[in-house]
Length: 414
Image (cartoon, rainbow, N blue to C red; front, side, top):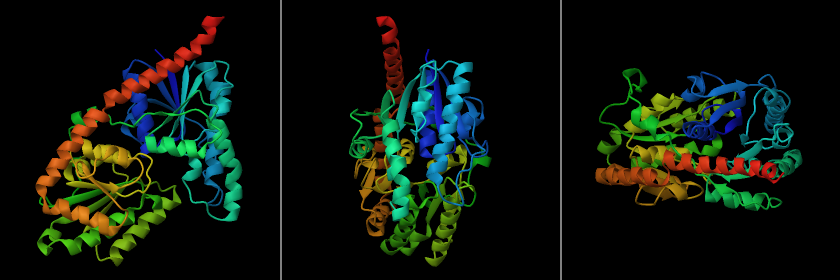
């Protein structure tokens, strides 16, 4: 049995959070002991497993501000994570022994964690280099980011093991962190398919106002501009020109995504999208949902006929896997991680990030029900064969076991 601590900045409901929660569940199912240390955990805005007691969560440093007058988000996030690392090294590690600390998103705490007398191994999961997640911006911002980018590379290289979520991210990792000679291991995110298979939905979990005969296109992503949600809306408008009025009357687009009132961009972008729907004359055809629960999200995935996934150069994307497992064809941008999960014209469509390309793919599905079913069935089989939770669990278990064995080698040599 290996004792593992997951250190994660904000245990909300994004893709990175789903990954670490699934990783914790996978290792727990393999007989290991797991816990979480985080800067923020809101029981009203988190995955069920971190709320219902399945996973132990300890929150520290939530009093540290997330921004300074709406700026300096990166610095504040780094300070909060460094605080958590110091808490672990000089307090928590003296109360409990951990063999491995699993970090992700922010690497600055790694050298501090390594100071702990218990000498845990550090495993870092790179979803995507942090320095590439925001636009370069002004000259002042570039100077502001320079030391942070340098520290990100140096501290990432201090980990005992490095994982990435796709071959695409692995290539970007090597191009970005030229000082790090290690080739990271690819550990594809997976689905806790047991939850999808065993959850029985009740009437309260269903979303009202969706006519039973309606053909639903579903978009699931956080309300962030980089997720390109307006592409789904423009493509939906383009679709109106490609089908008959009778077909159009039966269509609905549902945009559901993570929404945190503490995050200014979430609030602003949600309002922007609602205004865009009004301007396009689509307000009655588009439904916006904020932070649906796990059960509501499952209902949406079951109810939809197809999934529209709009981020460009997304490093992996767990939502397409969820849709494929529930036998839905996926329409996604032909770049990044989705090119490793979706097979064009078999489990969905890989399109150029334009309303014309997306709209044409949507029209094909509306006009051909059999194509929807065929692609959905092939998508489910692909997830079962390539991205199963058991395969994910076994690989992660092997990684953790090998890392622990490496930790014991010096002791044997003595």
